[in-house]
Amino acid sequence: MRRLHSLVTALALATATLTGCMSGSDDSTASIDGESSLPGSIDLWQSTDGWHFHVVAGNKRILLASEAYASRTAALNGVLSTLNNGVDPASYQVAPAAHGYLLHLVAANNEIIGFTETYSTKSSATRAIGACVRAVTSYLDQVQANQTGARVQVEVGAGGTFHWNLFAKNGEVVLASESYTTEAAAWNGAFAVQDAAQIATNFTVKTSTDGRFYFTLTAENGQVVGVSQMYTTRESAQTGIAAVQTLLRGMDLI
Image (cartoon, rainbow, N blue to C red):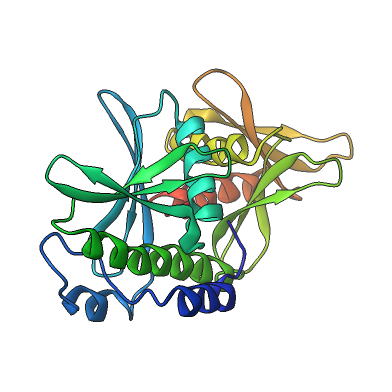
């Protein structure tokens, strides 16, 4: 999720000469002006039929919607695929709909990752590609810029596995995860930690072999999903727990 795409995207858009915007009616440029100064965002939520995500423009317009996924991990995998493919105008296909045209965002395996609202004309749908690309690109640029301060960061290890770290405002790692086989699973683990951290009894302070103290965080399924740094006293470990709870409360993970 942390790659800079602005230059590549700008060149691709210039080549494609796509200067349109997302608009439910016709070829208005008002929403381009409204969304250009603010980065896009990703919304992830659970509904009665499963997990969904939206790609949202800077002006809060929903640009792309996903299908329903059976699990949060599967939805996060869809988010990652959207971020990988959504910066390339060639990944969008204009498709006929019942009352107009819409866009499909298509992965390399030809799977449809996301779709837009229906536009009255084919030219309006084609021009919407630009807004979708800008929303994804600006989101990735913002993530790339946020490499300091409080955050959750997923990293890949030498063996190809993934893990996440929770950073405090001072840049210190205050909680780390186990290894995961996929990036989506690592992000799902981070979400599980955010859920579990709001229940104080999920934290356990332990003593290491050298006499120092640390704490673990256990998810609802009984699995340890986070391990802290070492502390010199039990009291400082308890303070660390409170700090982790405060950090994760309300933090936007993606």
